[in-house]
Amino acid sequence: MSKPVESKGGLHPFFSSGLLLIASQVLSFYLAFRERELLESSQITLPETSLGLPLAYFFGAVALVGLILFLLPLAAIRTVLKMVFLFLFVWGVFICLAFLLPVPWAVGVSVIAVALYRFKPRIWLHNLLMVVTLASVGAVFGVLFSPLTAILFMLVISVYDIVAVRFGFMMWMVKRMAVSDTLPVFVIPRTVPGWKQDMKEVRLFEDRSEREFSVLGGGDVGFPLLLVVSVFFADGFARSLIVAGFALLGLAGAYLVHDKLLKGRPTPALPPISILCIVGFAIARLIA
Image (cartoon, rainbow, N blue to C red; front, side):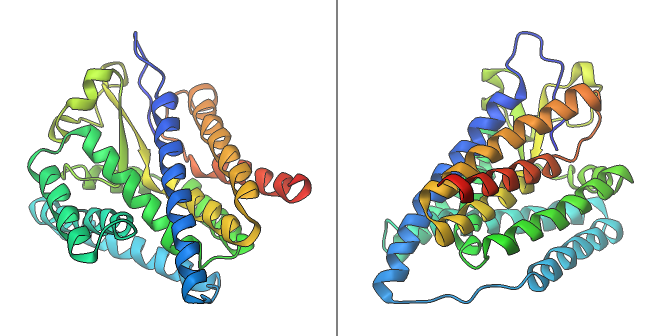
């Protein structure tokens, strides 16, 4: 979850985070529409994924990342993280562009865009690549989940989120990963000029009164996108739009918990987002 600064003349981080979430949702909807057209025109029926497989992949990935962070020296961690996340960014941009351009062009533009980020890692570009990549993840994998499976998946990950934050595992991982200027988080500057800063200038563990940035975990956006896309394919656009709106309310609730209840301490954002998404899903089933 993000760790908002005490804003002095700047906007509260929720406004920027909310805009990034909305942008991710809009792009996911676009990709989902194009994906549905492709599947219908090709008469392709995709199998639904059971809950066990994605959970096994998720916790396997967490264990693998934990081992890498524990065993490797910081220099090696920096190199490995850059390679992994740059690859994911290339993949995310490619998925989006593949619906618009021929595959060779989509590959070329994806590589150029991420190469630009590699040499000019501005915060605005980092966040843009995060939006594109997470929207691609939501569109590609959300279609494989039934809404119920997506909800159960989010609930299990929410419990993990609470436990990982409560016992310090999440912050330990973030601190180890912070050696790289490529992180799976949204970086939220306190001021508009801050969006132009280099990712190498981001300091996430300064004193709270001096902190110029807050962060929002990629999973806090990515997992709700899975549910939104899942509902889109199962129940239609109107119901998925309601779930998307409640995801935004859940993000607002996460910031409220962070500011009012936990007084700025590290906060698991996914639980309130998941709860509001479930409320939105129930309401959508009743009225839409």
